[in-house]
Image (cartoon, protein in one colour):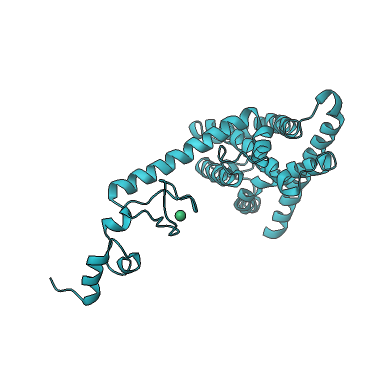
Length: 278
Ligand SMILES: [Zn+2]
């Protein structure tokens, strides 16, 4: 076999000199050396003390499949665990996270992106927003409604702003949390609300006649509002460790601010969209 001088030198020195190995071929020696292949720090344990990467092994098809599967499983386990705890203690999850207990929970924004993606998929599958009771009456109104729907997918995060406003105005002076810490509470809280909205939509995937979906929309409008208020009130009282007997006027104020802000933001958003599409 013909070799350039560089290749033959590399073959003999491969185990000792990484800089030479890296310009030639990939080998088992490269992975056996106790060096982190992500950041080049010397390794003393399986996980790199500098960047946290697990000691890399040479890729094989089996490893690739196994690793991808493990990541999906991990993502699922992590998000379900966080959601499960959120159901009972939305304010305490946010409180733990703000106070530094973070590896146990899924990052609030990561969870938000996953939930919004699921919600958008479900709404597209059952055409929830495309069912109107005026179908066939007025083609212009229909076309307008269709265009509003295309923007409506972006409105799920308005709730975060409303929860934040209630928390910020209601409790800013009573606690020394900064704006980002209030925002973490708002995002975790909205994650739980989105999870409930998704659960509430599941029956429409099975029974997807226009008649059922219109009934479902009307009924949901009432009880979802009450559930949202209950979630937000629970989260505020857990996050700020309220004593209900003493702090109820402040909690009521924060909840009223939340309700008013979410109503105003949604109406403002709808008006802005209608103004844009007209
Ligand atoms: Zn490293």
